[in-house]
Length: 76
Image (cartoon, rainbow, N blue to C red; front, side, top):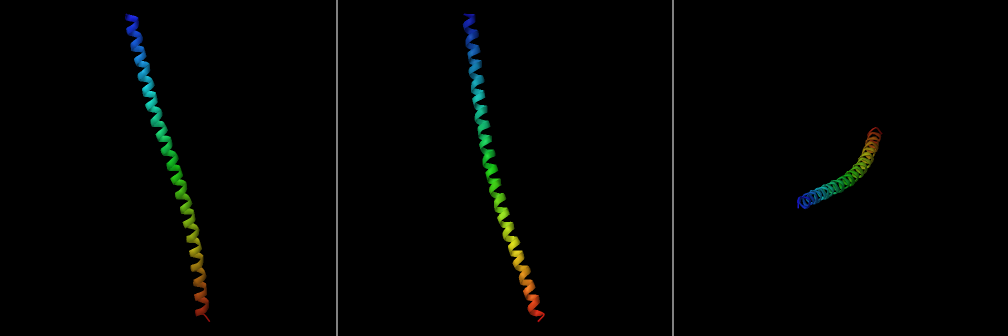
């Protein structure tokens, strides 16, 4: 009977350990999924910032050209 009791205790420990492992794996999977989502969001933000920077540079070039045109028309 003592052996049966030890076996039951060992099985319970193994089951508890397996449940704990499964919970840890679910948490890890959740963190990995969150990290992937965050990376995708950061990549999207980076692309948006690069696009905005290109538009800003184009607007700056247009303003420089306008300034040159204004200087040329006022100097004539």
